[in-house]
Picture 1 (cartoon, one colour):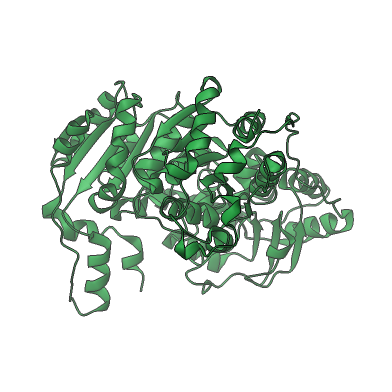
Picture 2 (cartoon, rainbow, N blue to C red):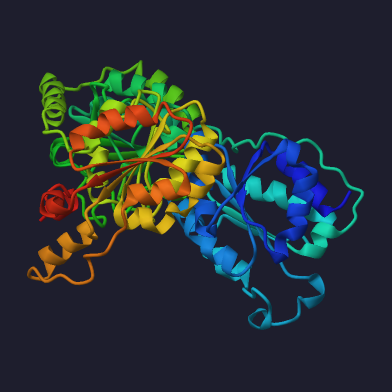
Length: 541
């Protein structure tokens, strides 16, 4: 056995079966070991290293399991860093295995070396862990540490650098079967639980702001039980979308919509559950919250970090919410009848909105169990409000890194992770051009996802922002784009073109029945101003 054999035994022990990467000089020993162990793994050959980690990112978001990418060091690793940065800001468990440098050259300047990069320093700000085994026998511990760092607390990415000579080194050690990583459980303070229940019962107009940790902790039903006890309206952060069915009567919508902003100003108490109060969710931390805020979070450092709170409790939500619901049962919540009516009216306001073109047609075509992946594109900004989803991990979006080009590769990863679920991506022409080269991967492995590309020959949202903030002056936003249907067909994919959004539904339904990827090009060059008028953050004063 050598270090490569040990590496793949460790990955298998951690439940890894899909790998996204590209071979190169300094990771060839890894790929030689993969050749010996290929019966236990599926390797997906990417065409650009940025896609390796974006595909792994979508894989992890859709499944909850870590996505694993492989690159060479230096340019391969730095190309892949975009998907790592996205995983860091949105708390996604992505592992990058990068080739390394021969140990005998460790005292040499990386700037003088082939593919030279001080990778530990490069990745330190955007990872939960960086490891480099010094010997083959150290590989199991480094892999265990990487998975523990990715999955303990809020998830996040890790990078492991693997020197070719470490991978080639003979070793005798065999890995023990991985023990499931357990979240550390802090005993709950019964007095604090009781005090929080008492305070919640005094809210007459309560709101609950839920975040991504409700999804991580699998406590959606528990949260709904608590909301029903309080008759509290539920709003969600960007990363919290899908934690509860958007059709649920108490779920009002994203915290950034006009409707929910009014409720935030009217409520007399807010319960924040598993949310980080990020810049985008709070409009630069300028939102005014009620004087009474109670915060529940797995991370004690988050309590009161961004906004003053009345009470806070740190702990695993799967323990906190049942205890709080039980304690609340001994209270008599004072929610007013008028507030319940106000929430119902707000729900009707959202349901009465005029359907957004393209989004509306995709929603009609995508079955309830489907996964929707939105790139950073003008019409997708409305999806938080206008694209209802029934449950967790069915709405994927790069919420805080805001990674242009995310849509197609993340959808590809989602489909690989969840092959039984239909997957549809929505991209703009600019984003799709950044990452569409892995249509080749989708075709060669017969991965049947559908990608809708809105083609208007413009960086539309940026043009709208220039017009709004710079007295109508615009520059560098109009662009030449290809015939996307012809481009897709050149890869061997199926493709359709339309100028009428009403035709999209039927095209998607047909694409979801195929065994190959489908690209639907929606030509909207004559509707740039109409699209700009749909962008919510350009409508804000």
